[in-house]
Length: 443
Image 1 (cartoon, rainbow, N blue to C red):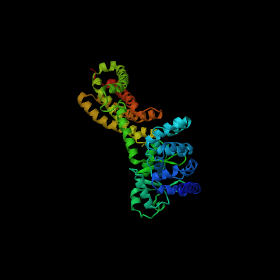
Image 2 (image 1 turned 90 degrees about the vertical axis):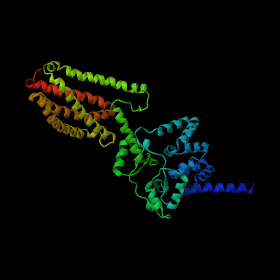
Image 3 (image 1 turned 135 degrees about the vertical axis):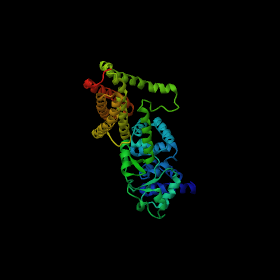
Image 4 (image 1 turned 180 degrees about the vertical axis):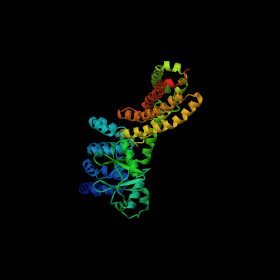
């Protein structure tokens, strides 16, 4: 055996011994050197040594080293790590790396691949679906100069906040990039780190995410798994973008258009998506027409009622649409939830009554000068107050109840509300007219 081979074996043995005896110090050393060197160094060790050492590596260091491993070595490591550490690592990897690794895992260990796939499939509308997996985590003992050097090595764009952890891998603080650049080079991160403003669980709902951002007014919040391992970070812009998309899709579905339809979609696609709701709208229109038909005798005697019917229905429809828009906005932005139904209902009922009174005064004066009938002016005034109160109440309660029962309030509310407001307008106007028919002019 040559001297070079003996030196190489001795170096390997010393490295393995050091990694085994001092895993924390070894992890900190790996965080200081380029990722390619760290990957090369770890590949020369026994898999058991690397597994024991891996849990002490910060998220950013672990990710940058792992992507430089050959696929076979990466596969061996991922199958030996604790499940929660493996899932946290996989979830932060670039999608092409994750796909290639899972494909190889499916060939060698299909059962484990299926388990990993299920654990990586987070439900819709959860924090895990909003987060970005690019995250920088450093030890609290690291100096500012070392942290800046490692940031340059990692080259992760869009990171305005870095996170600090202790030797037990528990997050202990956060530092903005501006603070890091302004700090003294020799200062430790533990000194300049600020307490975490908030943390989120991977399975927290989108409503919870928005509430936390509104409550703490921070630019980014880390996302942790059940074992307190960091999975990623949610930036304020991600939440804003998601909420904007929700509002945009709700605008479409409120008028019966599909969320998938775009301005340049084909005409056939638009017809297929819109036609069912147009047919349903037609049925509701017939229902409203049936209400009017039941008062056919009264209308034939007092023809002025036919002229004023669209006024009553139009005002109630507009008032209901206003209440629906405000309530839908509150539900989408998570300003309200289904438990606020009574408060929202009472607010809209009171608003409907006040608006109804104001409209009633204007409308009754106009009708009196047009018809010279005090009875007809009184009928339209009372009908306006009643129909607007009912319409506003329906606009508030319909989307809340649909959401409570697990339906899409954006897509169903408009159809339900249109039927309610039309029937409310017709019934209020024609019902009051029937009660006060003796005061109305014939013909």
